[in-house]
Length: 119
Image 1 (cartoon, rainbow, N blue to C red):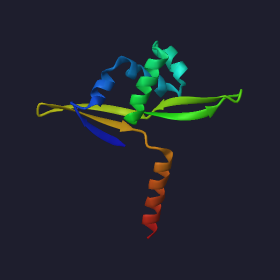
Image 2: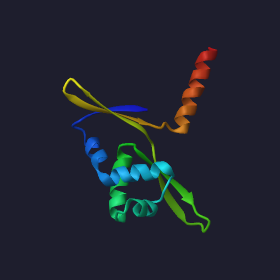
Image 3: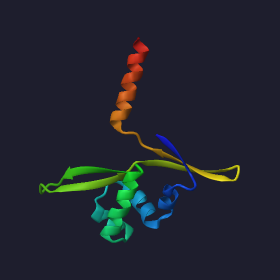
Image 4: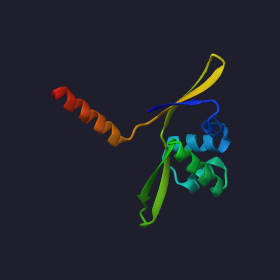
C-alpha cells in the first residue's frame, strides 16, 4: 500500500525522530518485544512504548502476540514499512510511504481477481 504525505504532516516529524528510526530499523530485522527494542535502541521503556504507539497510529508497526515456552504472553513488534520516497517538485516536499499489505488482504485480492477472471 502506498500513502502520500505532504511536508507539513506529523509523519515527517516522526521519521525525523532518532528513536522512531531506531525502532523501525530494529523491528525490520526481526519482530522484537519492547524490552528488546529498549536494549537495541538504548532508550527507556516508556520512550519505546510512546514511539511504538505513534508508529502504530501511522501503520508503520504491527503488534503480534506470542506465547513463550513458559506460558507467558509477549507482544512483539514488527515494521510494515517497505520504502520511503521523498520528492521535491514545484517548491514542495512530499513523501510517499510503501507498507506491506496484510496476508489476508493479499489473499482477498487474489481470490477476487480469480473470481472475476472466471466470470
